[in-house]
Image (cartoon, rainbow, N blue to C red):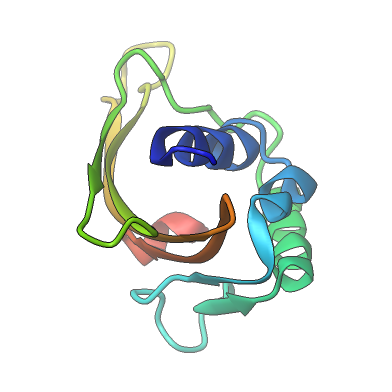
Length: 138
């Protein structure tokens, strides 16, 4: 059985670090749900994706829209804390992701703070609620 740490690390590697929609989707159960409750209605990115295939398709589209030279998170400056709960199928990730400022030093680092709530079934994500500033989904 996978630990919350292992599940979280696989999810982060597949998504934010490598932007691999196929690998990201495989972290979810076949009927898994990805929810972004703070995403405004009518936004370009949906508030709810239901099922591994819908997650795969939506994330592939999103990743394809990202600039090739988009800066990855600075892992040395970023951090997270995982909180287990009384329910062994639920854990919470408290995350501060840091993106370096520009190379010329004209722009400061950008810190993105968010909270994710994971519900796990059989070592896969059955439901993930991602609470972050929706304007980051450009």
